[in-house]
Length: 180
Image (cartoon, rainbow, N blue to C red; front, side, top):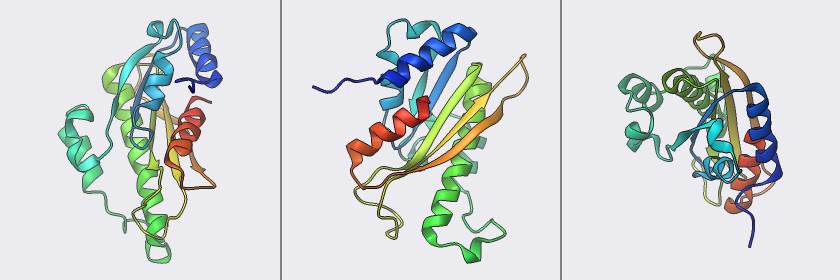
């Protein structure tokens, strides 16, 4: 049987303990694997405050801090709002929307929950995709940091592209990348 966690989560929890820092997580296509992998590390309760899984944004307001303004900004997001939107494919606009989703949710969770860090992930694990021109999994990871009681800021954001459309393998790949 495969392990629920992986070594990168032990390192993440250890680093948070050394910094005396706290963390919350909001997930989408990893389906709780990031949260569970952190919880599987002994002693994680000293740094991990909890998290949420917002798999379908339209129905996920209760899982997004029940924040009307945040939820509305995520569901009314206009994929044609970019200066180069008319040059982008539907898949590129969809990926761009996940950059927006992860940055907004990481900031909101870090500020509202009151942790030092928040990890947000969103994307598509596979094997079916919307838009159809996507044929492999991708995930956007955003990390927000709050220092000295100030509002959080995004300190890292990246897109991870998978070489395949294997849902389970992609969920593990994306979760592990979030912990790095």
